[in-house]
Length: 308
Ligand SMILES: CC(C)(COP(=O)(O)OP(=O)(O)OC[C@H]1O[C@@H](n2cnc3c(N)ncnc32)[C@H](O)[C@@H]1OP(=O)(O)O)[C@@H](O)C(=O)NCCC(=O)NCCS
Image (cartoon, rainbow, N blue to C red; front, side):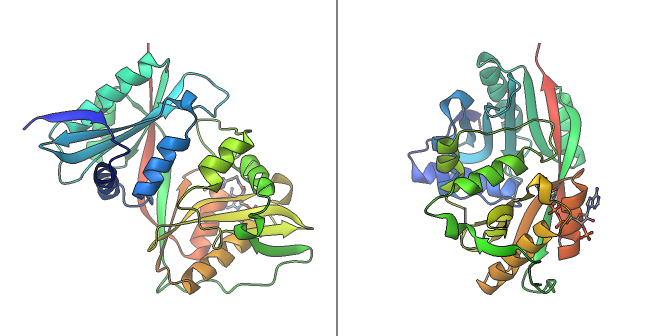
């Protein structure tokens, strides 16, 4: 039985479905659908040199990797490789082969610093260390059982604040782009991200197949979008892709309000499970999620390896 690594055949629905399945089994806390996998490959700018790799054994997809350059960071040379092997197909060499293939490719593309997430656990951490990666920051995955949880009741917005949904911005989404750009820049991370290209944002983020505009709540302050809670749904599960408040409106309860509203509407729409993820240093967001009733269900650790 030989394991081989090759590119995902993004025009082959069966291959994309197998990739998505293996990735979901390895990391069930993040929503991924075949449409989202293809969308990401198609709409990441060419300078990111994005690739999806699969590890295959006897015709079965047993591992996945998403790799590329961090194209939206002001610091050049940064790259990522996220490798996930189906939990029932471990110890067959798929992970090591995916890492080697990704590293060789990224080095050829000019990468000098490689970032990789690993689910917390002795085997994964030892694997990362053996491949020369050092531990950096960590992030939690959190889950809320919407069918049983008692959500905090929704309250009336303070004077000057009104709640809308992203669907209200269909004709002109630019204010959503500006809100997203300002808040993403402040998310705790060891890679600085800044995005300025509206057309690229429209294609990659606004038209993302998992984005549920009706369940994405936006809080306006004096008519201007000031906070939002971005909902992704895959038909059965609901996940928060981002919550953010513009700098000059933080500490007023607007993120809490937007997320609480979105969760109430998700539950009314029939969703029974809510997922989210937070950097372990994101005190305010963890406080909000704890208050909403979320519980930590897994932790992942970001690793870095410097080349040369
Ligand atoms: C995180 C963020 C969305 C919070 O927005 P906000 O509108 O200020 O949040 P709220 O006012 O609704 O609630 C903040 C809560 O965090 C608490 N808090 C603030 N700083 C805290 C800290 N360092 N540690 C713990 N709790 C903290 C506040 O006390 C408040 O809770 P309370 O109402 O019980 O007092 C905002 O800081 C932001 O946009 N950050 C950048 C983007 C980001 O990191 N988003 C999350 C991605 S997962």
